[in-house]
Length: 99
Image 1 (cartoon, rainbow, N blue to C red):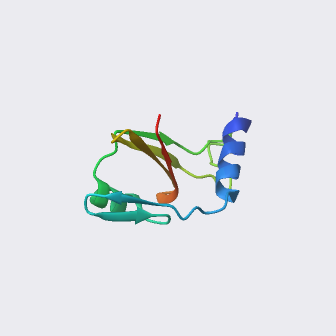
Image 2 (cartoon, rainbow, N blue to C red; image 1 turned 120 degrees about the vertical axis):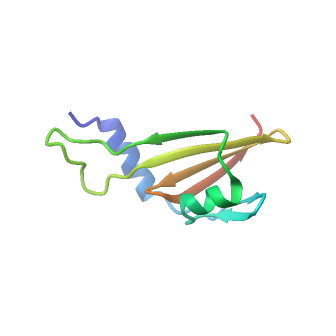
C-alpha cells in the first residue's frame, strides 16, 4: 500500500522552489545543485545522515517522479547547526539554526 504522506512529502519537495543558500566547509563552499560526492569531498562526513527511500507501490514499482531524499546535519560549529537536504543526490536546500 502506498503511504499517502510520503507521496505528498515527495511531491512537495519536488515542487518547492530551489534555494540558493551556501555553506562554508574546510575545502570550499557548497551550494544548491551540488552532488553528494562533491559535498562529502568539501565538507567531510555529516554528524548525522538519514535517507528516505521512494515509496514502492503494491505493484512493486515506485510511482512516477518519486525521489530519494537525504537529510544531513553538520554541527554544532560554534553553536550553529547546518541542515542539508538532497533530492535524488543533488543538494536542494541548506538551512542554518542555533538549536
